[in-house]
Amino acid sequence: MKSASEELKKLRLMAEKSLIKTDELDKVLAQVEATLARTEARKVSAKNKSA
Image (cartoon, rainbow, N blue to C red; front, side, top):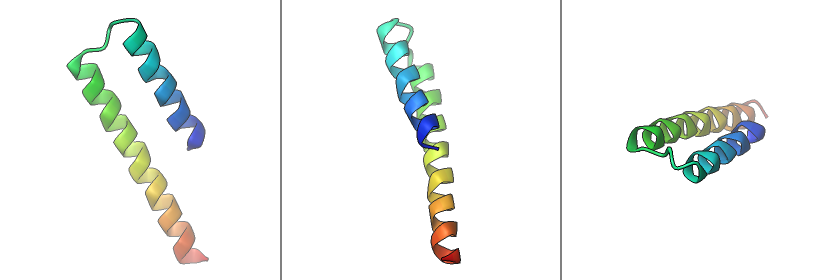
């Protein structure tokens, strides 16, 4: 998951630099980041429960 988060950060920086950042793009990126964070948190939680 770490590489996906890093890739998202890179994509966000590229969007900001290319001046195509819009409110909608920012919203979509935030939703994707939140989804990844929730998925990662679930995996950590499941791992801790099984340990």
